[in-house]
Image (cartoon, rainbow, N blue to C red; front, side, top):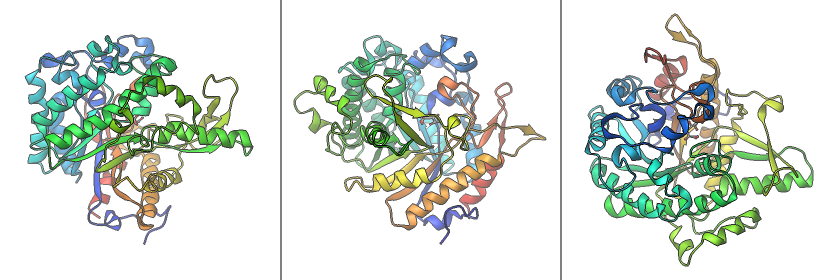
Length: 451
Ligand code: GCO
């Protein structure tokens, strides 16, 4: 049995039925922003204002997965990766969010899915990875209850179009991040701020998460259905009472808010009283409709956060002390490298008896990469993956409920408000020539998968 910190892990140590793969998202890799009838999403709109994105970058071309999907899937194959998580761009399928279907969009995903299957790569499809149609945002987006109807239409079309071949589905990607960053802090699309946007968006996304699950189950009886949730270990910055209470509150907001209503436990209002204001948006039967018995929960972990009490932060009275100020090893995102966090989160989610199974649907790191003689010696990323995997293995060996692991991400791509600066890929992309080069971490992962 291998222990944490040992670098000579083998995939076989995790058992035969452990799922290994890589994760991506449509907006981050596809490009083809207006190709073949695609409509405009909130991210097309948000990036149009260059002030919103580091270096004024946009994702018009990005990795050009839209044209290069065969090359990427073949590369994946050559690296022994046999599970590929990607998302469906809503506006490629429904340019206006609802109504007329764009058949060219359906064809594109059919081509991707069929090519994966030909190469014996299993597709794992995320329905919503943040690229809401702008036409729906113009009518209120996630803040309006009509989103449940719009979202249901999109889910139904995806299930009917792809459900004969795609068995693994995830309804939402990290609701806390797209709502926290997009509808509270305003740093992601659509750039909205404040509680009046945040709270209804939270409740509507929880309802959509469950409704999406129900529709998939009805339309694809054999489906393996999940949803994905961001999570970080939260610890108090100082050892005083106030910081300890703050950590409990932030944990409720960041780690419990989107899973507990799904499990029928309601919102964690006791630890985060601000959530009592959700009652304004909750209608009769809603809490019942928030529930769905997912086949798996995808958890996505990168770091841990230290938090302190702060009188200056309205509503929440809590502040994250950035890793850069704590004298710890960080990634380019200013996230602390802290491998025990992933073990801690697996343990935390394993403690919910109603979660049937947990899969790590994202984990990875951005570090500076240098292309030298056609090689990228990304030792930091390689060590990061080995150490985090060591912790996943510890969790598995303890009998915790963990069944798979997907690296974020396959190729370098468009990292939202940070543009192309933070590279997370196992494969390097030269964003001028679009040439792909497997990094040392990618070569290691590919070897690891056959070990
Ligand atoms: C998220 C998203 C990914 C990010 C990744 C790195 O977790 O924010 O799912 O789209 O790119 O997490 O930040």
